[in-house]
Length: 120
Image (cartoon, rainbow, N blue to C red; front, side, top):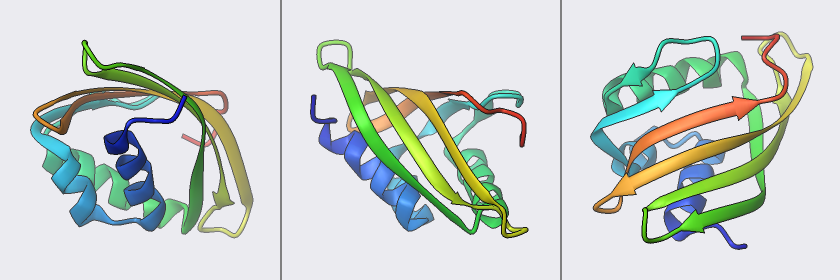
């Protein structure tokens, strides 16, 4: 299934490292669950997290493999792979699923699950 436009925009902004666009896609009170961290509450804190992540991984590109959407519930599950490079120049690759919920065109809840959590 083709990911919903908002989901495509989210991953495109991640790949472009476009914090301004990500900010437009996040509700002010969004919550982000990321492995090995406490929940990140609020768009400002989530954006700060992504900026730190991008510094640690100067190259990191996500490819959407499949998506399941429940339009009535305003939720989606996205299976992705990524590949890139750490700040130390080491290759990095992973695979996971991101769950997303939205209201009024903005993401309110995001939760990441991925296979290799060793680097985090």
